[in-house]
Length: 145
Image (tube, rainbow, N blue to C red; front, side, top):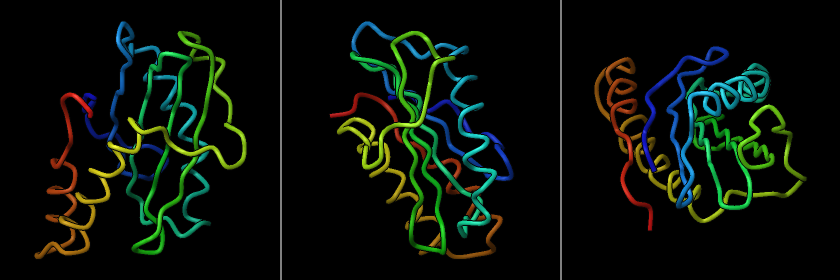
C-alpha cells in the first residue's frame, strides 16, 4: 500500500491510496482514471449526507483493477462504491455488482482510515480546520498484512 496524497474531488477532500499486487504498479494513467470514476459518484455525495471527506483506493490486483470510493456521511456512517475492470485497462472500469465489498487488502486501508477519522475528526480537539489537517496527514503505508 502507498499513500498517493490528498486531492479535492467533486467538493470532497479525498485521501488516495495505491494497493499493488506483486508484479503490478498503479500508474499515473490508472490513478487519473480512478479520479475520473470517483468524481461522479462523489458529486452525488451531498444528497447522501456526505461530510466532504473520503478515501479512494486504486488497486492493481492480481486478477484485475479495482477502485474503491468511501466517504463519510452523517457523522459516523460511510458510503461505499466499488468499480472493477480488466488488469491494465483503466478506461474499462465499471461499477461492481450489487453487494461487492472491499477485498482483505482494501479493507486494511479502510480500517486505518476508520481509525484516522475517529482519532482526528470525531475525537479530535480544536477547530475543525485543524482536525481536518491532522486527518489528511494521518496516512497508512507500507506492506499490508
